[in-house]
Length: 469
Image (cartoon, rainbow, N blue to C red; front, side, top):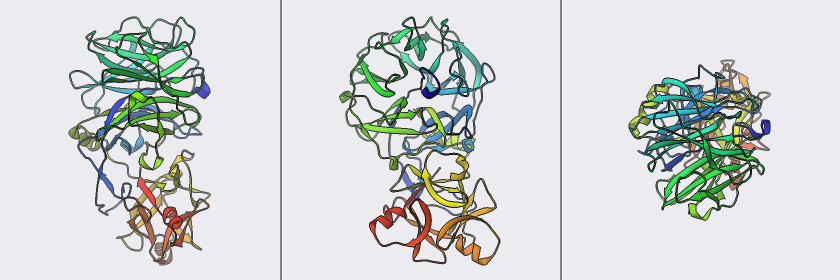
């Protein structure tokens, strides 16, 4: 959701446990898909993300369910070419704020807000529901009514309440207080639900509740304070409606919503994700060594990459078999994006056919997508073919990178060919050496891409990139 267009907006919340991924060597054949330095390999602790898409000018907007996977919970690979895997057929015909819940029997239920585009004034008492065995098929589509209020049902999330032997569905709506609160309905089958009651109301408008359950006997609820556009935490030793009290220091990166709590699988680090609602399609993250402290430190954007144009996500751990099956079913992207090492909020793109690094997100978003093919002059190298202009490739001219039409000359092929090397500033990242000027590497200077000799530490950082999706 996007609070810049509506009074109170929700975003879903998820719990996961994170482990770091290993890397494997790259094989060059046909179109290339390169990881951050090297191609990522699954580590036995993979994750799945569900989301919808929006971009700054709306060119990337799609209100179907999108799916991405990760081997470390930080670097995300969109599946199905970042296209939807299923789209609602009733209600508004679109969804926002999807959520995956693994039920007690091991299968999934998929929920989402019944709303598309940016008309946040409409009321809706229903949410979208699918059943899914493994997130490759989506069955028994239906809409579930959550309340009788003349209001909305945004950002549904669910958990198993063992004390009640029922599933609880929490969502953002307006109760008798007249402002947004987190409400709850209970269900056993996600076909019918009890009359909604208020789950959390601190006395001011809140949306986007996300729970981490039973952390050393305490349950944590993070939410958005709609008046300050910050993420705030509450806690309780029970899951009863009305039992949570605010305790944390608020965090934000600009105006932020859609908190997601995530714990590392390898240490005691907790991550808090947030979604920008003033700029469509961008996430931020924070970390803490102790969730009970309620204080957070901003996470370096070098270590995480969200799916392109993703909004209001859900994240859940899955098995290695489920990860492999999802990749087989929906396929890996045929394109890549490249992120700057020392400006990790910036990505390679072409603008007016000039190669440069610009802040993500932007439109046309396809300007940042590249088909990395075997080098035109030497197949052991690589060339960068534009997705939006497939007859054009990045080549250097007067040492500056430009997007030009391949004229099939030897000179063009040489100018458009580069050798992938270990990153000059970080060997787990990537640098690219020119084919016909082997003492020069692709680097950015004043945010424009060019090939230059590399000598200083700054040069090395300017010439180092993450190649991902």
